[in-house]
Picture 1 (cartoon, rainbow, N blue to C red):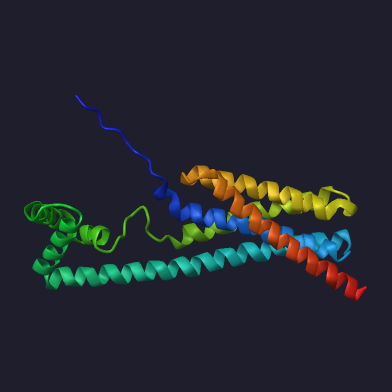
Picture 2 (spheres, helix red, strand yellow):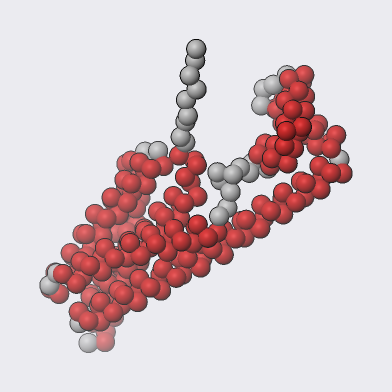
Length: 232
């Protein structure tokens, strides 16, 4: 007797994973870059820490608001598509059944098999069948604005805390290299976690987050140095 086994796919985590990785990455990069830039301008420790704290709170709220608005727009589009499909099923059930049949045929089923499958799917839950097979919508990938907003804000805060904590602990003389090095290490760890959770290749994930983080901090440090020299 065969035993059924459950499968867990990374795609079921794509919604919160994208928001969490984006939030943490932005928290590390933006806060570390701001701290490095302000410190490179020869600012006092209090000014550096104040800028870091401001970046943490402003960034977390910005990420939450941006994710909520963006994902809400996606959810509105999904609801509009489902409402349109529901109306078409009410008005043209035969045409919708034929549409589903052709979808299954295009995937390799014979005409007779496709018709049988379409009929059974329509009898069970016509809207769900069309949402999944025609529109590409599913429960696991549905847009969830509040979940995305909370995940982004929380992950941004965690990411931003890393360079901020380092800035409070090291001497001002080594603040820039210490924050930069620790932030790159955190970005590499984030890339590793994201790749492992999402089932993606490790190397490219780590490389892209560390490269762009290094670029952002280098540019901001250069601007801070130039600004500090000009003001001085």
